[in-house]
Image 1 (spheres, rainbow, N blue to C red):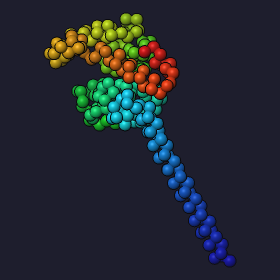
Image 2 (spheres, rainbow, N blue to C red):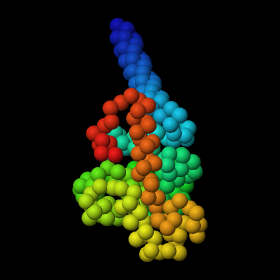
Image 3 (cartoon, rainbow, N blue to C red):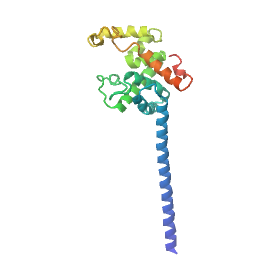
Image 4 (tube, rainbow, N blue to C red):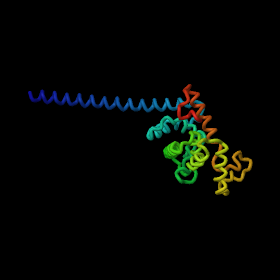
Length: 224
């Protein structure tokens, strides 16, 4: 009698263990499928409008932005990466200088994306606090947080003329570095600090990405 009860208990325990195993297996498979599906969905947002490398990094961009509740800016960061590097190299977000390091010091794309998101969030938060428009925040990714202060004093709205003024003022502080490599035929010369046309270029990419998905322009992009 005791043996029968013991066998029943063993069988019941085995069944429970088997059931738990299958539940864990289903959960793992579902999670993997979800991650693959997210990746495919994110990449499919960007056909032919940005490089393949940027497309491949987009799920990671989205994941990092979700960590700071800014996932709605995924297309913005993808457009910024496209402008910065087309997704090439160890620092695809060209984020080294925003971390106080020499250019291209970061050689890990994941670290570059983390720093790029951090830099963007700082510009976004500071720009919103200073009540500047969104194009100013995009330009600040290229020219630094000081550009937000400058625009704030000029009425709060970005323009290429204001970006030129800021660039020239910064270049004159250190002309040996910000001289466009001495190339007077460079389209930026003599505005050699940053790229005064940065927001214009990134904005075109953002608008194309939004249009390609047949979406209405999100509220945060309507003043671009």
